[in-house]
Amino acid sequence: MSFGIPDIIHFKDRHLPTAVVVAATRWEEPPRMRHDVVGQLKRFSNVLYIEYFPTGEKSAQGGKLESMDDRLMVYQISEQYRKHPRLYANVPWIHASVNRKYAQEVGLLADQVAPANGCKLLFNFVHDFPEIVSAVNKKWSCYICVDEFPGMQRRNYKRNIIKAKFQKLYQQALENRLAETVDLVLTPHTAIRDKLKKYSRRVEMFYHAHSIPDERAIPQQRSDGRIHAGFAGFVNYRIMIDWLIHLVKDPRFVLHLIGPQVDMSTDALMSVGEVRCHEPVYGDEFVKTLREMDVLLMPYDPEIIECQSLTTNSKTFQCIASGRPLVISDLPNYIRMPEGVIYKAKDAEDFRLKVLKAATDDCDELQTMRRRIASENTWSKRGDQLWGYVSHLMPVPETAGNQHRGTEAKKAPDSL
Image (cartoon, rainbow, N blue to C red):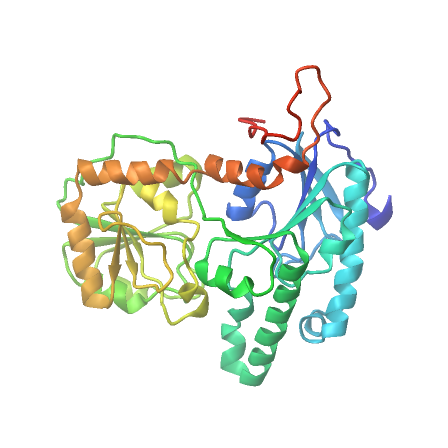
């Protein structure tokens, strides 16, 4: 077996189509959109998930393939061509040369784990890997753009403005080339949709979603009579810490930080009010924690490029599905929702007042509206959307009852 993989593994049902999903994150990392997309693709296909250079981590020297279940395999890309990361990041011909070698590696692996002549679909989350499109022997390709990747050069801007501008232009050129070569671009952000429409034959919105079950019993306000406001996510450079400081100076509020602290100290917050830090939680425990809040918060800094582009993010519909109101900063491209679902604040004082208003306005009628919106934005609905894009490519068995082959869309599978 090439690339040092000792034993080839095959999917249990090799008659199913194969979705090759390429992402720059480990499969074991906290759930993100790529994990949810894989879950929906498994409804109608096998999935080969490629871990393409996860940030800050080395890969297996010769590549590592692991079967996670009957319909999912995870391949950790090999280290054999990754010799000079700095040159790879900054020298276009080296970047292209390395990408071509790894694209060939992925393409050969896809043919080995699935029938070479079978139906293959490519879903690429990596913006600077256009070479993957021609290397995989596929029927159809898609780029899923979940962030403003070319603009995320904040650390380089602080050290070297010229280098950062070069990297932004170069990375954008790579993404443009990728958009030109795929059959479809999907993004949850209107700003990115508008940007890539210039290069892609087809760009569609693909919002984040949720898998939280509908529960009408929402916990009542805590007995201490204070307003418990929660931020769920990475506590990092994107948050306007001064807004949170202004909030907790008001003794009526208790702030909950639910997630890891990455590059921001909470000492200033702790010194002025009550702040409770929670370890990252997932699944049912995460849902439970959201529902224990009175109000949920997203005070992202609209001066930061990737925040400016946000239309939805991974927590948008999770927050709405929890039944709680959401208060955010005035992000220019964020999804429009009725007040009572999402409240927008223009400054620190407005933020404090909107959190107070969201808590005092909350009622059964508003919770019903949030549940209705949440029911229209589940991952099952997004899976149906994906099926709509690829169903015409699916092989249809020749049976006596199949009298309308190709004349109507096949219904998306309901389960694995």
